[in-house]
Length: 201
Length: 396
Image (cartoon, rainbow over all chains, first blue to last red; front, top):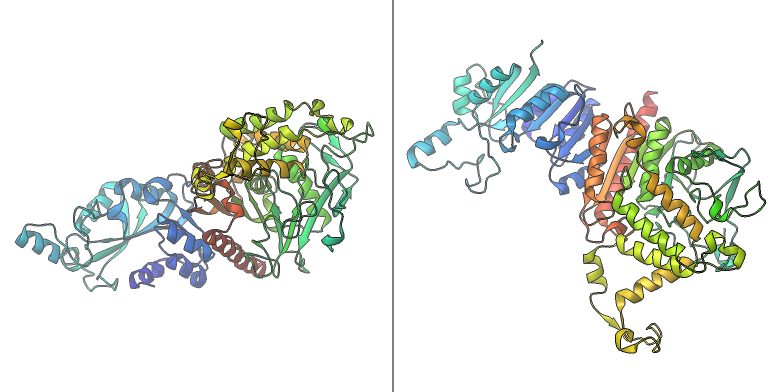
């Protein structure tokens, strides 16, 4: 399991109901089911991954974040997880809204477009930056909505989401040390992870 | 049971099917009380002492209970013998598998060939109209009779999938896992249209005799054969037909139309024609026209949402059943879009759903054929559900 998936798992209380949106090969939901006794389900866009997951006995359905969250009733899950996908969905704001409608909490990880290497590349070369995290050229990237950590925080504030926990992580998914300063995290964090909940009315 | 010693019946029900006779009968949705009720069935594997390992497999329109053994009439292997058996995806070393002939069928379960108690004669075309709920209610009587309280799983393809859904809707507490395959929560206008063409072909046969053909020692073989030929096309795909037959011509004189009927036009025969004729003629030897009409009508009536205030989520609210919905990419009879509709409704109900579309170019019939991804899906879903069932039992 990737290190960042382990960090996500640590945020999730045992025996919770979890929906992993973009569950990939099902590693996280398998882990949550086996070690935390969670009712963990997945939605996955890649049919090969779906078949593999179901063949492993995991409850995974073919679908995607943009179209398939709207069906679930309010509060169906304790946690709705979106790993490294927010930047690739059609309507990130709407997806977040749905996640926090159907779940009490949302856990979101995304690659940080504010990382210094990206800023420097754009500044010095004048071309779209390419890094190990942002590794596809502009014309073929699925990442149509990149954002920085600060962008994301502004959106959370606009939408009234409470940030319960956040952390910057490096390329491998390990926790990075910029825990106190958002400014530093936004400059040095290759990826970010957030635990959100709705503001109480 | 040694099938080989049984007589091969071509023109009548000589074979003794394994049958349970339930004197209490069944109240049909149409109001008719059908008594006694006979249900013919086959079982495989062993029921566990706690009776918690039973899987009910529901057959499709023209299938029957001979799931994984040689068919007594055709001599062919069971229709899902590649799926059900020791070590196979539906593993009879672990599970007790039950398959029964549907109500209205012609392989031993009460249907148009049965004797009507009131008249002392066969029902024939007077057999009352039945629904998917009636079909499932009859199966439930069999499951009661076998002493099984809760089915570990109900699995079925096509019309079998309609039954699996109906089981989950009508008996939510008796179904731990349900696998509706290549099916739909309602019969579409297109599918009703195909059924209607099939039925009109039967009605147009001079041997139909208003459904009382057996009084005339006849069977509407041409009509039923055409119905089967037409239906069979809908089970395949253009790609599958092209690959299997292309435009190849059969020069075999025996199968060609006799020379008297305009040899210039029909002197030779495309392979696909010969194949369909074979499908038609072999079908009429094992299937009854009145059963075909009765069951196709039950399919046409099927619309789960309509029965629940127009919302397909309603029958599945609070359902604890684990669902695995499977469709096939080239199935145009029960297309993926209809499975997706079902999945969305199950999500609205908050049910536990897996959903896979299997990539295949073989059309609707893919669920009966060799598809490795499909096999893995069935095996994985069943094993995953079994793991959960064991956990729940441990907690209980």
